[in-house]
Length: 330
Image 1 (cartoon, helix red, strand yellow):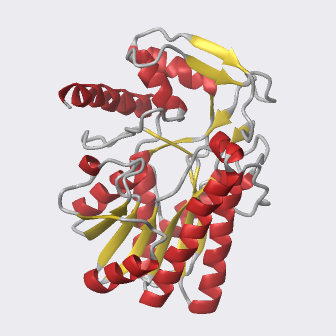
Image 2: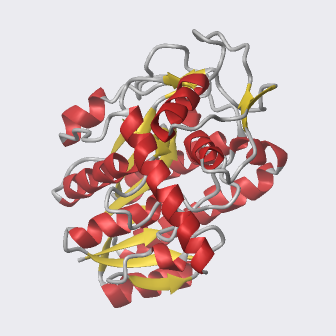
């Protein structure tokens, strides 16, 4: 049995590949390296430079490597960018996912795990959101992911494809062993940005919106450590391989932190000041998005091990410093 990981050279995908390799799984990584890094992939994995929308390539990989499961991370993820260029997001996130799903069905893949997002909920309110909440995405990014979830549901009903659509909240942190982390230049993740600013790689941190209906007026998010997130995928993989029914589940901790709270945590952990600029709201951003993780905990037995904002920031800072040393060598 072999797992195909799409987008396995990216931030979350590379962590998944390391986790699978650590568990003794055979892994094939498919990535076009548009935003990922070849060096981030565990050397034990087989790397293929290609596109997830190439059905013929996917069919060949399934046949040659005996792929029984696909974990699909490849896609575009920046909400404001999706508002500015929606058709590119529908192409990359929806159309190409359709091709991947079609190849999986034709190839008899047993399990399909999809990287979805809390953006499918839109603005759910200040309380933790459960999977039963209405889907009201407010950006092309969220809608592109919702459409893929719908395709998976239909493919499951028509063809028996069993899948897990995992709705991520805000992913942060880095591999505790220091093997990979968030490495994308110009990344829009708040913790990444704040850590770069703490290490002098950015001049400032911009707070987008200070008039939200939250305790301090800034956006509130549920930050999940990337290692806990890929652990949830591993649990989903075992569940589906064991015959479990398809499911949709949130991946978060059930507790939110505001933008200003995150900035203060980065200041405290790094011991350095940050230049903070207050700016207007960004298109497509919700006031507060916090997960209810009850379903994934009860259904898959998932238990987070790294639920601590200070620890998440500490790992992100350590990776950012290591990345700086790597870039100096390169």
